[in-house]
Length: 314
Image 1 (cartoon, one colour):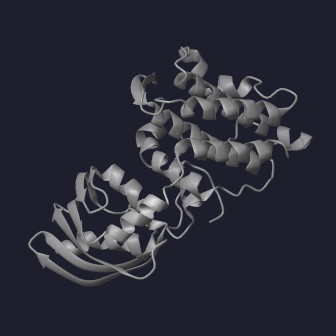
Image 2 (cartoon, helix red, strand yellow; image 1 turned 90 degrees about the vertical axis):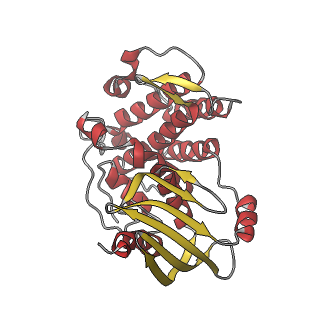
Image 3 (cartoon, one colour; image 1 turned 45 degrees about the vertical axis):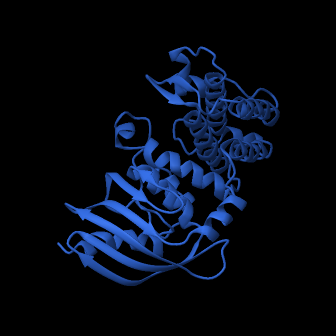
């Protein structure tokens, strides 16, 4: 097979899918080197591409050559916040129908300066933003809204909100080093526990503040914790908290018939977690619903919701 056929979806992802590499045949051990960042493994590269792709204004393959299993492309692209056009040579090596390595060659000094000047928000900032949005939603729910059926068929809106509050509280307790009993992790138990009381917005705000403080504590994101039969760094617990806040915030708002304008930075970060954290094994275990087909032109938030089994308008 002509190796250019294998790399075609790679360049389509940059040109038409805002860096979404989910349909690109990258080998699991895909290795990438470049003047700004290098990656050992496809998961990290896919996450980077999705984040960088949101800033790409235009992307063109000017010339392309092959030498055996090596594809060399001369590319031009435009990317916020840089003015003008960037030009680079990219080498992609193909083996058995997969892209196994890549090397990007260009003068990246201007790009490095721009990246240093515009660092993306950290996970605790994103948690604070997402939790604040959920708090606002909870403050607007009517009496009938609380008893309405949620997007999770077995739960009402209030049960969904209690589940979210309980999950964030548990994750904060893990991050604080507290011992959590296995039975506390039961999702139904959290949904049936009243975490919200008579003032749901105020109660949730207190839990949200504890969540942010737990992950903002020095060393928390790097420290490893026993969690669900394995050990994970605190950054993973923070990512799960952010994912829960975003997805269940949408669940709550949708069930209560309220608008929910998702924060783009939060969506990108939650997608980076869900892309590898929500897979077929988790679906078979009943932790997540089956993915729903959606057009590749749909927004990233709609694609994220579909990935975790939620219907939403493209």
